Amino acid sequence: EAGVAQSPRYKIIEKRQSVAFWCNPISGHATLYWYQQILGQGPKLLIQFQNNGVVDDSQLPKDRFSAERLKGVDSTLKIQPAKLEDSAVYLCASSLVKKGEQYFGPGTRLTVT
Amino acid sequence: GENVEQHPSTLSVQEGDSAVIKCTYSDSASNYFPWYKQELGKRPQLIIDIRSNVGEKKDQRIAVTLNKTAKHFSLHITETQPEDSAVYFCAAISTGNQFYFGTGTSLTVIP
Image (cartoon, rainbow over all chains, first blue to last red; front, side, top):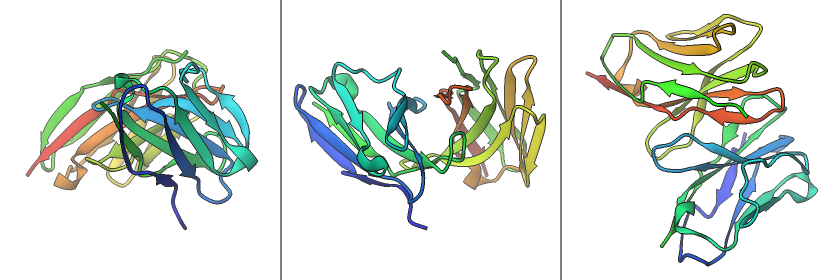
């Protein structure tokens, strides 16, 4: 079974620039999550999709972050403009059902300089 | 929203000893509690989970206990091995399907 795919794996940008991350969940997984993990901290949920609808985005900084999951499969997370404090690993995860086992992708390490 | 606290932040044990990590949560409506293991530079992986209708669950050397009244749950690792060294995260999921992770425990098993 193929796992959750993410790209790019690493990204370095300057503050105020824009960046986009891509996630391809495990085939058939209806629920998709984006997390932000700052070094030394636990993952923080940014947004959760059920198919192509948003279940929860209460912790997403909507003034600069946006995410979409068109057609209920792949998803993109965008940051515009980036700030220094956005430096983190962005993890995508998917699960077959709500409150099911989450499978994480390898993450994208973002460095904002 | 939910608030998940995890203790200790670091834990060192001798190989063969037991390790216990504790988490507390604030939202009494939370009803699913997974534990994840994250090795350095790798993705989190589910190691065990428990739902609120169960008090204890075991899987070989790993067990999780849940006290709904006190709103805390614990991870127990027995007969620890060097490969158990990693960061462990607890999480609590509310009825609104919102996931809240603890701050992590860095476990070191000393050979």
